[in-house]
Image (cartoon, rainbow, N blue to C red; front, top):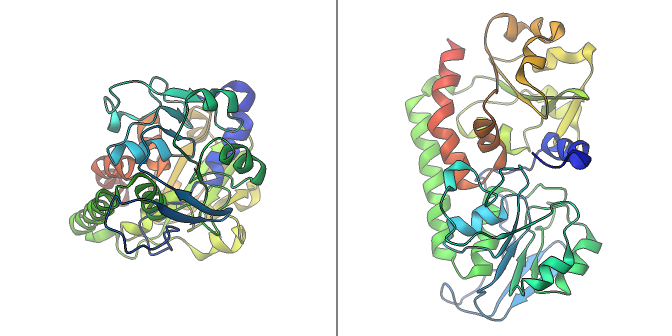
Length: 326
């Protein structure tokens, strides 16, 4: 996992949720009449328009899931951030062996700009990120930097936006469309296999040293469930307001109640959740309609929001959901 010094911050990011999904959100990439892969290209971001003069050969990928997205498009970053602490090349088991040469691993929240300079990047990807202006200024002084799309600061970039923007930057738009089409097909197949999900409610919760939380419908994990046919209770969104997650006090743990309740332990053992007496009193938990994730790979796949991670999770989770629904 991330270094202990950053554990609290990292936990807040995991709780905050890094929203994704292959929905209809604007993709953030400037439309162009050029054929796929032709340069220069311009990409509109929340922090300005980035122009890339020629197809990048040396890519540094810093945002949450940006490196995995580049890999899925056939481009191996020379530098990458490992947000979920996978170790090694910084990717999950769904992309094991995707690198032929390991990237330089760059710190997440406070990257070493000196290390990035040494990598001599042609482009820097910071698409699913905080949207911090100072960070962007420092990165864009090194190389053209693709920042968060408009309205997606604080890790709210959707899967579609991430794929579209990175595909545009790398001259891989046709490949990007195939990734998103494949993801849509995977969701459709899961819905067809499990029509019982339609109309059922689901709450995706979390548990950390600070207590329980729940993800709003704008978060990637909740969108995963919605794409399977579940609905997220309106009470969660009402509590979250404009945020994409909400902290739950002991008094309102019943907000976790749904036809299916999921909980992701964050830097704590799953037993800390299952042994919690108040959690056990949530109606859906009492009825046995809950899953507390105890496999880090599954939890990470469910959380990362890249097309490869989502499809990997789709191979494993729907059958578990169906079993818990009874």
